Length: 450
View: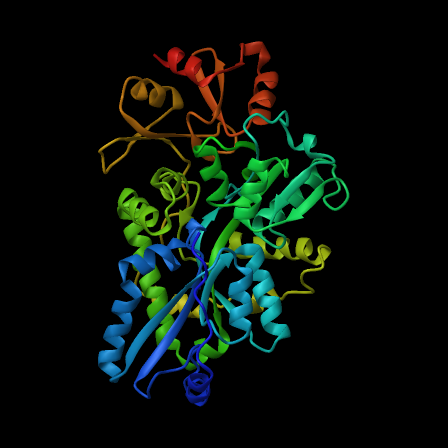
């Protein structure tokens, strides 16, 4: 993981730039009256923010938009991209006036709104990056050889998460549904994602609840197995773009340029998902196969900047969870959401379609395109004997895409069904015992498909 870049400037330079920063309304000021720096906070490894971060940066679209604006205005625009592991430090920098535009998950967005109001540096939600209408972007995982098989088994166990994150929200809600007090029923470890992943491997944590791409990465590397699929909550989760209101008011054209560039990056990802996954993998060091699990053509995340009512409505349901944790007071979601900048940026564009049901997908080595199949059985049959780079199948109940060789399989007559978790497969098999449903290994499923 990359360490966030140093923010400190030499004291003399700070004194020189401070008056100009106030005049221009930019986070890091300007080096001269004709140079404006726009500071963007992003999370390179939170890969369903890539259209406002990693992918956008690699494509250079924002710089292109600003270059055109600068040519018209006689101003040189520069972009300072600042990479963080979570949304919390981005909010801290925004409320200090040091970041103009940031991207983060739904729970951190609410904290961003609350902190901005408290510290007299209000922010607005202006677009969405990636979303999943059922909540499949968050997952609870445990060690591969762990005896834990369901959420109920977490009672009294040590669970690592990042308090205030969307993944923590998933954990809290899932435990409550399982009849476990999220404060007293488990030993919660408040850790950064990378620290929690290490704790899981070291055995100092029994489970890890995290957001993309950590669960998929650990599963892909054989370092974890899924214990709980966030999509079981059937509550939307998403990441979005927030902006300081001062910046949006003083430089509305620059914000429009950012949103237009995000739209271009979204179009690129949708049109060339494999190339986009490879680009993000190159920038982050993540396996491209993991990036594609989330950001691919049938990935867990759907990319669309639209401020869909399902998503903004979900924010309102998130507020009580954060209030109970003592992380926010009341948050006026309607006041926080500002659709006007995106309305300007999307003028004349047709709306993007909503998420479609995921299909099984096969990525062969040496190929820059994938193949889709109508059923997991067809995928397994096609994969048999092939030089497979990655094979993906949707959970039979939640629709969450997962690696075929990490999924739990159920054979039911001629049908083969995949599940993200053992608990999901067990529940299905027990409910369909009369039709002969039974849990089988991946190798057995592959043999049955042939």
